[in-house]
Image 1: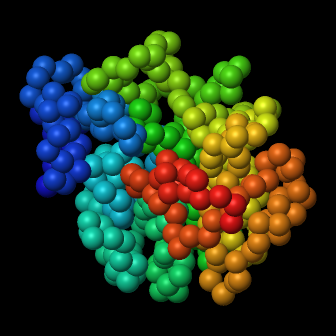
Image 2 (image 1 turned 90 degrees about the vertical axis):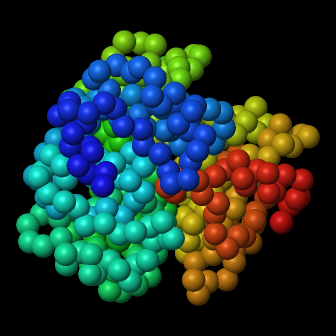
Length: 368
């Protein structure tokens, strides 16, 4: 039902669509559905924040088309797409936009009740011949890797775009061993979805890093702004969007995303970013997944805390063992002072780790 509506919006026959999750009664009022909006706006996409009124990124047909065309160019040409993400999220919407521009109908997996990996082999077969793609988040990929038939089906695809936040190194290594062509993507609703693939910006996308370490993105895939503008406005600099992410560019222009600025941990007067610590923790053979966050500390201001998911078949490592492991590659300041073993990490949106939920859960829990 959504694909024909998107096609009409993209060619200017219909007014803007608002992408809403099922059963969401509050967002239409918050985004002023039915009130006047600029003629060139094709989609209003809610952001994945957890607090406050939804801002609603204003995406034009030109931005959506530029993103889809650049994606196909990077991947080797248009193809058939498997829709395995919610179609109200920008990553799922872009699967539909790319399909519309390619003149194809995507094969859909119903994920309303969860990601059923047993359906993957049949869905991939229904894609038919030619180039074939899908978009997933890390939790979906990890689940598929645990099922040999699902992993084999993904290995038949020309590319599996992986977004929704960084993927644990064990998941990426297992995917490579299974022959799955994973392409790590970075982007957001405000950039019409993924705009940096494996650290390299898509054609036309501009990336720079400010003096304070924040990533700033420009180019034809940018939203016009927000339906509900915020202060300070991240679109204040014409032609650029200031993200809340910290990053670094190497001499060749490859971007490394270090993490969100508001996730930074101030401990003993020093700043620790969760991303590099998580990457190092995931190289421990017993760690299947992890999240690093800060908790209040009377002496240090904040202490570094790790929540880990133990890899199947492994015994839970001790805090001392993990600190020793991290000392091989990171400064001792970055090593966690508290450890929690969990069955699964809490997530929000389409797969981002919910650090705020971890803070609420373990505040005052003490050393483990």
